[in-house]
Image (cartoon, rainbow over all chains, first blue to last red; front, side, top):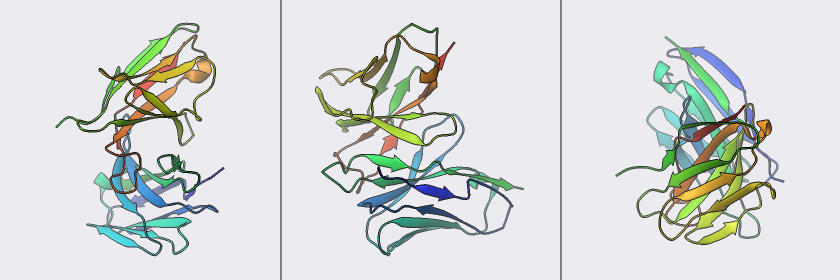
Length: 114
Length: 116
């Protein structure tokens, strides 16, 4: 069974601060995705990383995929209240042709206070 | 260009009743996935369907749960004889191909099922 551990579980910061959240696993994934979910809504895809060591930037968000494709991090610079939400990482299966199946972490609930 | 449409958004059922959850994928997407999100838990894969075919239902309880994606119309997740433990948010996602590596998944807003 593939598991993804996200940390921290909760994070409350002031506007303008920087933060990093982590997504770790003992399993290798063919790709890893980050989603953001707001209350009462479905997850919205932020980024997909595929190659070990890959770094992607999306405005103030920087995503990194570990060299061994087992872990990932999300760094937010100068956080804003609009960044508030549940950040989910999800790994795409890497065994037996089940590369459509996503394994989700439980998420990091980020609150950015004005 | 509508996204993934799920209805109803909220559904209340008494124990023993049937729940039917509907999902219309994005235009051009022929692959549909159902996930369940329980309180304090991450999203869990339930079933993967293509038109008229169930590809993988390994995450779906073998009893009381069924899913279909007919040639015409939305995908349906059906829960018979609901119990309180079925209370959860059920999300549908779609993709143009059977892998999320290149496109990721587009999720609907979910159906929140409450069993009373």
